[in-house]
Image 1: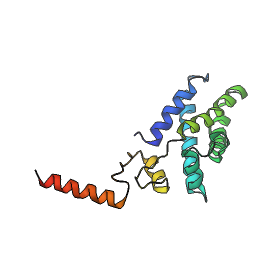
Image 2: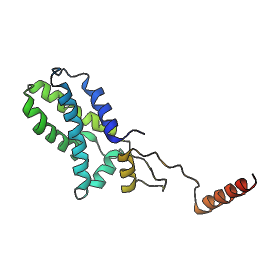
Image 3: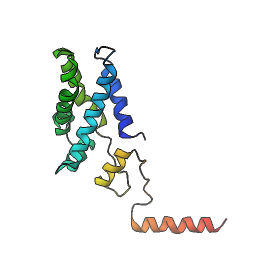
Image 4: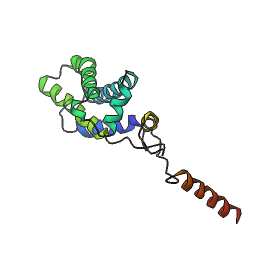
Length: 158
């Protein structure tokens, strides 16, 4: 699995293809979108209740369009990038309109990465780091023990 920054860059590039941006500022805009969304995610993660916000967003339980993550990313992007480029209201609106779409594509990304049967802070960290999900080895302690015993028998027979 790619890291969050890689996934974010891919989503930004794909979404921005439909917006006309002057070639001399295109890289600045793409990097600005990615950076703004990433900063919003990291600021949200460190804020009180932020882990739950991210869990709901990545788990598909909240809408990207109305998420505080999206609102913060839009504010950061408008303040740090768009205010300095002078692209005009139409282009600015089109670009900020991409943010909920990009974040929405990242939604549903969070899965049970550590194989413990639930989605928690550890899963968010593993997802953001680009880790591979662990496969479940058994449905219960007994199933896991039986698998371990069977595995040791099979290995011992060689």
